[in-house]
Image (cartoon, rainbow, N blue to C red; front, side):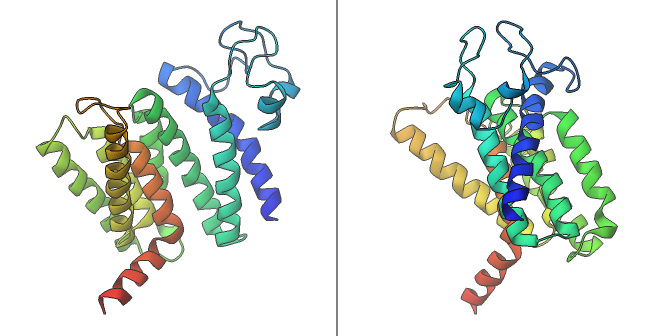
Length: 247
């Protein structure tokens, strides 16, 4: 069943790539059908097989030879792996369905911000609404824990954005709110700590290697999204481990 769910993830990844391509341009995710953005040719079904089409086509459009963004391959492989991990973690359960939905939001947000440095309202607001609507049904969390998590995520990131607006935008604040509503209290601290540590390490590495300068912006939402996934999957275990170490 893990393999079957991973295959489902690969199928879903095609839709996620469409969202990542079109939402920043305010395009429809329904029409037109998938096509090459360079030559405009409509893609055939065998051009849209996740992972395999990219490999067989050697990363290029079958019709005009234009390169296919590597991001397509990354989204497909990431989605398949995350779906497999979600099934392994939760089995067939309500948390599997919720986790799958939240993972799709995180993936879209991750790659859009990585490419465009944008956390789109048309993505994050529906995510927040969904997270609020499922609070009464979320297993393993009380409404108080989830609402408190959302409040903490909002308050901490809003404070940072107010003090240092050049380094933190309101999109990050909204994303932290969404993460808090998804993982609740106290796992929201796991998500935020992971985000800041990972962001610091990657940012430092980019500076040391000369790939980024001190004034070059580094998008933070991908680290928040990754932290949200980590906290959603293992936040409780990480907090329990931390508390045991303190004792």
